[in-house]
Image (cartoon, rainbow, N blue to C red):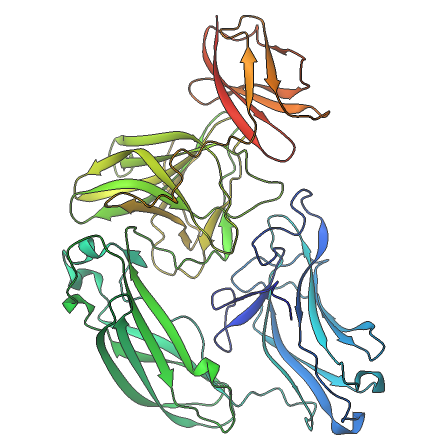
Length: 545
């Protein structure tokens, strides 16, 4: 009856069946339940059943509610004080907690069997509800729930599902990228395509089965059929198997030679193996996308990645990509998860490097766009696209898409989405002390360069945070500067002054009409950033004489 949980196929490890419900510290719009106070515990997601009529049943009917649950999965482990809870609705309208788990270790799915024995539950308005307690902060306190079954005439050990189900997402068709422009793919399709692809089936029941399965492929924008394939194999009870197909011949698809988007839908299906088994998980779809960007990630952030900066040094992250023909880089899309407190005032730059100074090469910066701020999107796993003011023409070959965080602490620990399902090379480097090194953390960082023609108007062309409109005087300044703003607030505003190199020089809090003392600054140009307690901010240049 509610929509607060995230139903997905990427957050759980050792998944039993396609699709599970993930409980975390975010609502259905991807917004933290407490967006101000970090490390506080909140009642977070709910998953509430429809009304179920149990008035014709009694405790003698052996009614059980069962489900599989898992803490963490590919996400963040719950804190020791966090929990997943189950409530049942009594006939008098009171919710009663009947089960909870606080096991925060990395684990496989466990099965809970809950007997319904109390006569007060056997009413026409029965419902059940899962709720999690989450500690808001770095940890999203992830719990995964799957295979929820309420039925009668069940023994206490009835935890085995007689069901054949697809489990993990099938493979991409591409060797390394999850997505790329079709024009670059067509330069050498055989170099990019896997020779074979696989999907994953699990026989969750107690019989050894021989199953028929198949794959249909089509390009869904044009409706072009690419082909189909079938197979048959034996599946052992209570085990997962992979099914293998020759990669569909998408290289033969005739495109129009432009940067048009193409989506090749690969629909896998299997014949049912048990009588009356669920059929929704007998089909699974993998879409191979060709668009105006390169990506290693699958579009789902199971965790976040961030840099802890040294006090007076910037932090840099670079993702290695390559162009397979000359092209123009138009911008960068980044998945920026919300954090507590808000990261809205964390300034950063986006850059394109030809080299980053590894393997004996000299660092070669091609383009940098600075004074950018996070633009958080409503929804789960939504990217923000930052369009470059000046498109960057690049030759064929390797390049690096980089995110640079300013020195001084104001941009420390900016969250970037991390796809933990990525098992190939992560192509990621970082630099917090002046030296570039390869990252050892598994997964793909969700930073995507955009190439080709003009970007759509939804892109952020000039991503300056204009939430606070203010002016400063005098400018040029000598000893004191004052700020003027239309904000009707009584609390102080935070200020941060940086030099032309991005280093933090002065910071503090100031009430309106009070001066900021700048007599200690050397002559030159500086940047004054003002921010409020909600994370809204803006930056103005000024000159110190």
